[in-house]
Image (cartoon, rainbow, N blue to C red; front, side):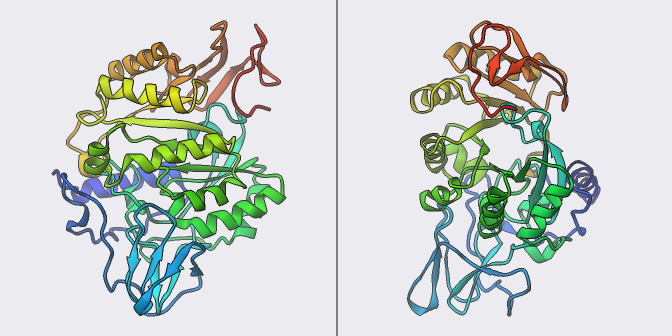
Length: 393
């Protein structure tokens, strides 16, 4: 594996700060060891005896966990189902067992805060041109070798610079910025579940939309509870292979597929993002299997984004995804029957535009995050009056 040099670390940290948040990384805080350095098996392990000696102001008892014998606890938020003895820390680094009680250490202390265009999430069929108040704390329940935000996703809450922002204050900030939605994003929102759902509950009361930007690695019960407050989501479908999920991401495909089915059954608008990593995900047979599953289980109308990989973290030796690969994937997915297929991380390309699946007329033109053309009126194509799936103004 290629090593990250000090210079590369500084440059990548600076890029993250400028593109994600007005404040973010405290410095070279990561003390990364062998738990995520392998290629064949990068599944996370419990951080034994790594919990702090006492709780801090930004601690909150977990909402979904079970107490076991000998003061052990098992977290029920995600498929990792971390079993922790007193003093242990979870795979996601944000949850600890203190004397037989499970606590989140990521409550009201986001390390990334920013106002984004909705298109950045990416959500192309949800309130175009609207603003989103985006927040994240540290932590992730996967170990992706290609992580784009590893400086926060693979960190512990105390290792980064953060801002105090409890749920009611998030709502005030959202209203002050005239944002229509709150996005739980950047790292992995599932790992700060308590903070997210408490904020989402207040947001729903205030008429603010809640958006979940996630890897989809979550258990059924917490997702159903969250779904009662969700308005939209973008879930990353890393690949359509159990072996690649294990090798590249340290997780499993099946729980993510269950997440899509639950969101579909709950009637929540969601979009899917597939990061096309060269040598791992750029396989046409796998793409066709993925499309077949989507069509059979979800239907043709959920937007699918093929996103361009750029060298990051432990895969900095790989080249960026060729544009020709993305164009080919988009063409195949549309030929398979998916109505709305987009390209990501390619700012100026027709693959960013929305075309009516019935008459093929241009509905929304996107130039980066700018939208010079919008021909969707009252949720319908202005030309043929076909209903366009999504949440529109």
